[in-house]
Image (tube, rainbow, N blue to C red; front, side, top):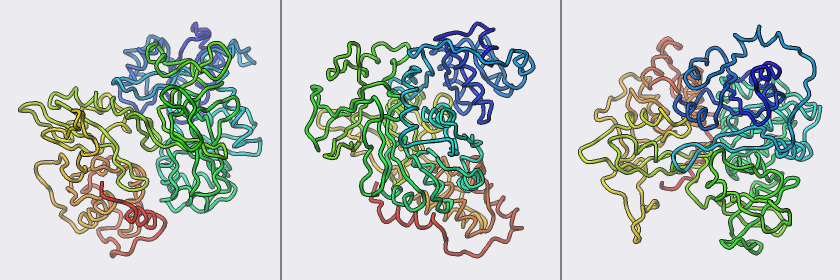
Length: 568
């Protein structure tokens, strides 16, 4: 693949798009790009066409490595398309011997696009020397060697996939690439982990919760790495009872994956730890002065992991990447994370939330401004505010509050369809709340704290279709209890009512325990309550189990959530 790309003119500092489904071909594509001397740009097949087209144009891609089934998605925006399957006879004609690497340490390794507050995603440029420093540090701590088997569950468009794909290779370990249908199904994932003899897995809190909801059994040989969003104490406690070691990982994309880490031994002490090798962490006030121990300030990160900047965004780069006044090296910079933090007497760091309106939902970084920008382009929306509501522990939902333009209205389904054209699925609000006007503070700004619960007045279908059959009614009760809603339309989709992958696993578990059939997670994504009820009746011949108390870990998790949940 590397030689084929070079024959097409690919060289140093050039960007090559990679868009494949999860398979060995994904690894082949990435390594081929790097060995050709270029840098890769992940183009997630799950993203909408408009977002992919923007990323292709913004990054200046002239070539994309993909598969035949995805070719048409790039045919209008990319001059050269190489399909690893249909073009393989031509690629295989290249010499297969060792290829000298033309990269220098300061060359680009990859460009990953993250959510942007101005309404469009921004590309973060990461160099080879930053990646090498990160991998060598991770190899030592949390640690990986030739005896390990790492299960890769993260999409290529999420930078933590760099650890999953490359760390096992430089350590002589084995990497198992989980297929999408496996990593989205808690029971299937648990089975795959056991079958592959996995010893290390990195995942977001949402994925770990999904495993626990599937009644994942203790496996003391596993080293669990948790990152992408804050590690809740209750989840830390559950994982400590099931794994051999638990590590909390922290770091923004702009400082090359993880910048700090800490082994967790006490669920009541979940710090983000200390900086990794050749990395500096500073807790500063507004004048960039260090604050005392235990005092809250903003976290800045310097050292080998700091990115080159945002591609084609010099002003934004200058704003977020500032001169490091604590090092004598000329040109040394540090990245302003936008996170509040404090340093503990033992040297570890606590992360205390965001300075701005950036959020993390199930590991995905979201700029609320980008969600708001997408919504206000709908002709019926005059004003919009997006925020995250923590319904209960482990159940964070994206809520959009909208004020209609004069004489205009739109249903939640219409607004959801509109933003789906430009936003990936994880950025689409689960709830839409329509208001006549926004509550304001004394200085005229939107009072976000005064915005009502999404369950108080949510945009809903004008007509309510009541569940008709006994199975539909029993399903509706399960949905009501897990989603926290008062009623469920028989034509409703679970995810459009505010559900997400973790909650869907709870529904599947309840259906199995109380009605009998074991459903695929894909059913929850694509079908309505009535359709799912019909599928249950088909599997059971129309005779579901009598209602029984739900058993298993999910029941205990939901019970704990309800006990700790306050009013939204």
